[in-house]
Every structure is written in C-alpha cells, then in structure tokens.
Image 1 (tube, rainbow, N blue to C red):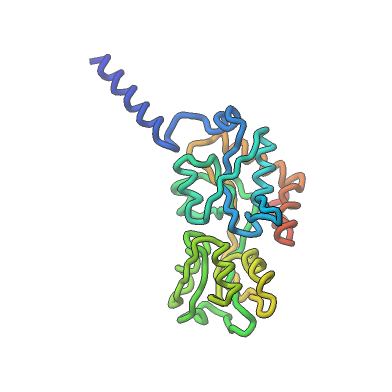
Image 2 (cartoon, one colour):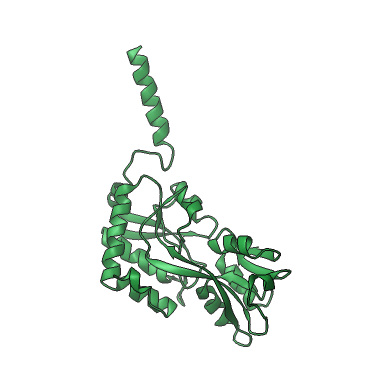
Length: 262
C-alpha cells in the first residue's frame, strides 16, 4: 500500500510539472541558466513597440525590456505578440514575461501576476476637431474604433453604450484604419493618436475625453515570486536613477507621474 501511494504521488508530480505555470521550476533560475529573458512585446503598438527605420525593434517597452535583461545579467529575446495573445503566450510558457504596455486590471490579476508599475497609459476618446464629442452620450450611434482584447476595448464596451465598436486585431491595423479615414473616432491611448496624426496631418485627431488612467507593468505567471522580486528591484532602481523616466519621456514627450519617481 505504501509503495502504491508513493507511485501515485510520483505520477501526480510528473503531471503537475508538465503544466505551464504549475511546475515547480524556478522561472528566475531558468532565465539565468538559459542566459536569455524571453519577453513578449507587441511590436505593432507605437510608441511602446514598433520597428525603426532599419526594421529593428524599437519603442519604450523594447528599451525597458533591454534594461531589465541587463539588470538580470542575461540577453534579451523578443517574442513578438499582439494585444490579444500577450497573456496566452505567457500562460503557455512561450515567454517568461510580458512587457507590452500591459495595464493592471482586476480581470488580468485573476490569471497572471504583475510586478510594480513602470509606466502609465491613458484611455481617451479621440476624433477630428469637426466631430463634436463632449460626453459619452455623444457617442451613441457612432462607429468607435479600438484594439481587440485591450483595456481600451473593455472601456469602449462598458462606457460607450449605444455605439458600434469596431475592433482591430492590433494597434498597427487600428492606426491604418484611422489614417485612411475608414474610422474617425477611436478609444485608445494618446500615443496611438500621435501615431495616427503623424500620417493624418490634414485632419488630425484630438482628445475629446479621458476615460481612464491605467498603470502598466511587467506581467508574469503566478507563483514566480523570485522573478517578481527581481523585476521589482529593477523597477525601483531604474525609476530612482531616472532611466525609466528618460525612456518614457523619449517616446511619450512627457514625464512619468511624480509619485512614481519618488
């Protein structure tokens, strides 16, 4: 009987170790042993992630991920994702972390863990100057463009009652739709509006309302306390020495909130 119980225990442990996120392995130790941090980054979400003139990864989250990898003493491996598949890639162990302007929300906290915030992002309603929008009631009956599976999508769905929500699979496609005039109203971030206006100079968008301000952070699988502690150490060190603020200001033209820099 005792031997049978031992065998059962061994089978259970083997099954658990095969399930991503439940395994007993230490993610931080794995990263150090591998010598590489696999960071899921959305490269279709300027200015957080994008390709530069030489088609190399660029953006504030790309540079932040490089800082984090250097802090951990490993190389950075970018795992390219889109807004909807950021968390699935993490949960299926295709990436060690998500660093893709991932806002901290109660729904996400049910399935993944977050490090301390290293940036903030607004959710705004934006439209051309000629479009009069001063309240949510003004959105009734209008087409509103946003990115599928994002916090912008959630706020559009819950706040813009009576509007038709047009969802695009990533920020790059959203930007293209707004530049072409396929859509003229968006619920997204100021950074997305700026990317649109760089190519829509004749009829630029402007902020009509701020719906919400969200802090964003590195996402990681639950139970990875060692990795979380190491990431938090990096966040606070590079907020204090100004490196994260310099990156944020470089791409967003504004400083991080003062209370984050204390």
